[in-house]
Amino acid sequence: MNLRKDLPASIVVFLVAVPLSLGIALASGAPIIAGLIGAAVGGIVTGLLAGSPLQVSGPAAGLTVVVFGMVQQLGWEVMCLATACAGAVQLLMGWFKVARGALLIAPSVVHGMLAGIGISIALAQLHVMLGGSPDSSPVRNLVALPAKLGVMNLQAALLGALTIAILVLWKRLPWASVRAVPGALVAVLSGTLVSLVARMDVKRVDLPEVLEFVQLRLPLDWGVFLMAVLTLAVVASVESLLCAVATDKLHSGPRSDLDKELTAQGAGNLASGLLGGLPVTGVIVRSSANIAAAAASRWSAVFHGVWVLLSVLFLSAYIETIPLAVLAGLLVHVGVNLVNLRHVRDLAVHNEARAYWVTVAGVTCINLLAGVGLGVAVSVLSSIRRLSQCRISVTDRGDVKDVKIRGTLTFAAVPTLSAELSRLPAGSVVEVDLDVDYLDHAAFDALRSWSQNHGLTGGRAAIRESDAGWYACAAEGRPRSR
Image 1 (cartoon, rainbow, N blue to C red):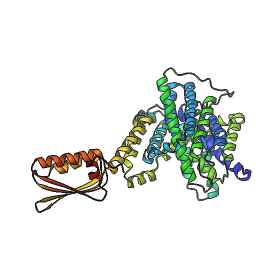
Image 2: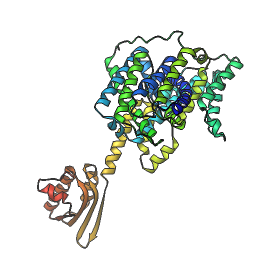
Image 3: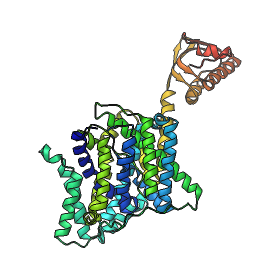
Image 4: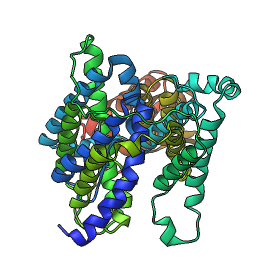
């Protein structure tokens, strides 16, 4: 513990966390207090057990769409039980040391998931910013937006627009010392002060008068419940572990123990669910603010959780002055920023943009799980295609047809191979130059069958290959495995 560094850093993170937690609770369709409970638990419980020393956990925008759908489908009390059970699943995952396995999901799918979530958040919160209520479907929110403009609450819309303007301009101020103050805090304070001074009639945060534990309730549909638990566990784990990896790149201190971090996230979600809080994950916005404020250890995250808890107990009257439209403006800005154009350009350079856009479309048009599933499927198919690319060329050398095959020859290349070989004239003399780094059984069988059939037409086929001997070994009944 280094109080000289950790205490100031914890205050900075606290100032960032409070408005974001309130806004995420609003966007999740959960009680507003649930966001603050999640922030406090993410700081204290997860912070004490963390395997990533400078990562800060709490309610995350990446889970907003998931939680909103589950709250609508299951109800809040069952949702809290699902959060606790998802935490238990994460504890088991950490116990069995499978953290690295969660990172097998391609970055194109992860970034596409975050972009889809960001678009969904922005579309939903635009309705709140205009004084209305959002639908659970991003597509329906988009379609209903023009009609909402005609009946919007002008005061709420002005507050939301003011919040977004401050957030955009704050990063562009020329004074580094001023930019050190969290822009989210400035935007929320400014919007709240304007609404109070102008005596605007807008909806505001409503916290319970007495902090009570939620009464957990068993689900009516266990199938839906179990799917919700697994979805929460997987998405929260992946987001937390990716955040831990990203956090490691921002500092030169001790590296993250991912299995330990996954266990800490599980403990945090177990506690948050039992106490009536939102699901928690590692959050890159808070973590980067923590590192930028020169935090030295996990205690900055723990202290920030303590400050959040104290604010719930003693500052609730001030928190209740915050207009919902201001929080909605904050979330619109957060949602838009989840669509990272730099990542899109990088993925396009590496020919992985297809999986990104499929994931975005799936998340926004169907649901998060379907979007991620479609993205993973496209990513796997693209990988198989790349791994199976081979170059086949046919040239004439007098009466002899030279067929050169280069690359990786697997089942995915069999259609192309069969098409090229079928064009060779019946009865011709063919020499196949086989220079591949891998030959699977499907490709071997296709090549051998063609060679035998070509011989039956009166032709001759000779297969030459490099020192690797993939075809020769397979023909002798001892195929190579690598």
